[in-house]
Length: 122
Image 1 (cartoon, one colour):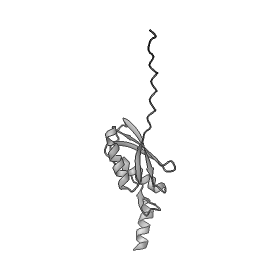
Image 2 (image 1 turned 90 degrees about the vertical axis):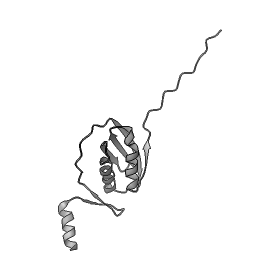
Image 3 (image 1 turned 30 degrees about the vertical axis):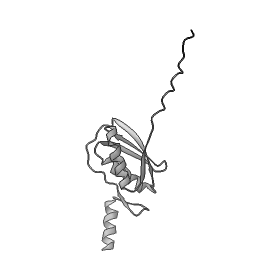
Image 4 (image 1 turned 180 degrees about the vertical axis):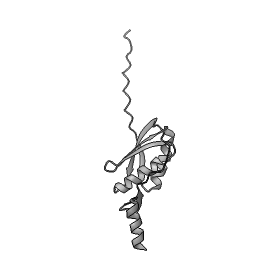
């Protein structure tokens, strides 16, 4: 029985081992492509291998309203394209459920400092 199970996994080619004890699937769920109107990045800590990164990307892509997700394992960062900012909490919840620490990264450029107000001489 063990030989058959291993043979099925090898032939299917969908399993990726993870040193956290999990298994990630390379199969992508069928989903309508939504143009990304809003893109944001998240810090994702605790990923140990490509399997972890692929699992995060797959699960985040499955969130309704998410069009794309790329995960940088070494940079501990996920960049997500979604239909609007309202999906941010759903993405955070999915990544936390996988067991990783996650928080949004504020990529917004700092506001320009206002010029000091001058008062006309009287």
